[in-house]
Length: 191
Image (cartoon, rainbow, N blue to C red):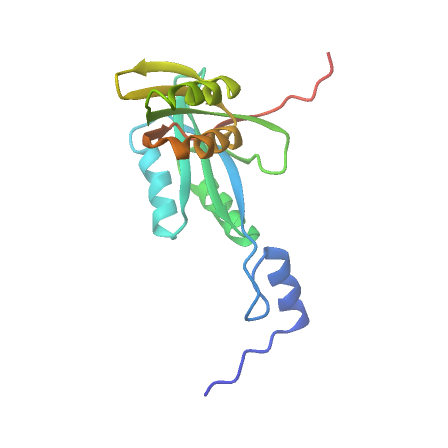
């Protein structure tokens, strides 16, 4: 039987700083990060970013891509989860890609985020009013309705979308489509 690995004080400090477990029953401290990557708008740039995540075993929770005001540059908004060491590695690897112009981790900064959600829910005569009330509270918009289903559009921060979906779960959700997070750092200039 192998003896347990003994860590030096420096290793313990490094592991704790990175959010890694030190004791066998410790949990790894991971957090969600929103990363903005500006890349050259060229064929294959998106797939190289996705392949980088895949090759290293990193998970992408959401990704949105669109051209910026400069048609030669695309903006990628990537949401991923990891401890501090993993996030630092992701940022380094993204910066090394040939097409990358700039990489910014918005986590820990003041930023605005929005997401679009389309939610189709089955309704009855009794549940219709309650569904419309929940929709009204969340400032959603009914974009399609049939005799059996209603499709609602909702825009806002991810937390609002999550809360809306949770409130709709008792009403027989048929389908949910989410755009993924789009984020931009706030400007702190005074007016």
